[in-house]
Length: 446
Image (cartoon, rainbow, N blue to C red):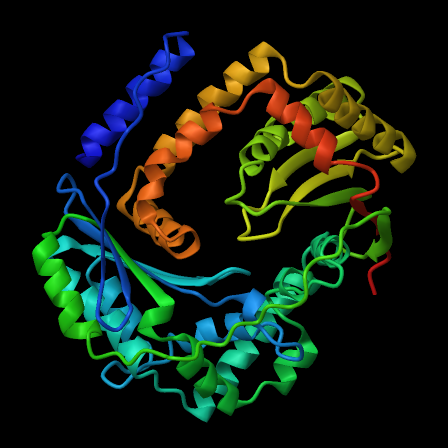
């Protein structure tokens, strides 16, 4: 479907739902999949409406693959991937893309590492060649390594040490996933582990994980499928697969049977806050959709229950939100409240607990379910509006679910969730015994 038609259909669908019309038909993306002889998985989605092409390469390695003592190494390595390769000097990748009006970036999360390039459609060959060259021949010097280690350490100072409430979120993850290393530790790492990192680790990390059989390349936009596949075979075809990709599978998770809590003083925080978390099933599990809707009911936007009660009606908080992270698994249901000046933690906690209990008892109202379905349609449709968004989503689905074409069934899963489903998952997963809580107290700045 052309992009203009896609957006127009999205607007019509959302409008029809808002006016109470019967459920409209959902969109279908013509996803094509292939696999090269060396194991590289390929996803393609053609759209000739706009003269751009998005290339998204996702490697099956993230913070969850890190060994103890090497926390943050996947993120450090992401920075190293921009330091040049055999045929591309340091900084040249970014210069070439930017000179053509394109954009590029990289991102590391717990579950994977991704690199993307958005280019004019005439530069498809350049984008593929650039990504292939750094997969096959990353060039890492000691000077570049030391430079990027310093960059990541400075990023840690700004994002963690210098950001209010950030240490509390890290502490919450430690409590929720206590004993389960893949999600228990922070993906950004620690100063101690960054100081201990060695250049040899970078090179071995690249050899172990940055191989075609441990990656997905997704391309969306204005291109010809046959030409694209020929380019992929030409530039990626000689990349050597890794027969023994390391797998770090720690022992299974022990079910939490009692509440966990911690208190932190945060010199950057101006107001107290309470963060809560519950371990929930992986993003691909059946109960996850109902838990996502529960999070939206409780804390997504000004019409949510927590915002209405805590912020508007009782004025005991300035912010209240809830969300799920969407992790490969297990996932986490998070809830946070920033208290208003003079409010008491005990008072706010009781009000939050009352909202959780009411949702478990009665479930959502018919009006809430109608609004949820409208918002899920809009979120799904507009979330796939751009070539870059589509390339990214398809790459992640291919990596995590094994088939990018499941995108066409995603929306229907949310629309199939019932009020009883929401009641059931809140009752089952969001219990006091399975809850972890971090209380943040404003501290004095040193």
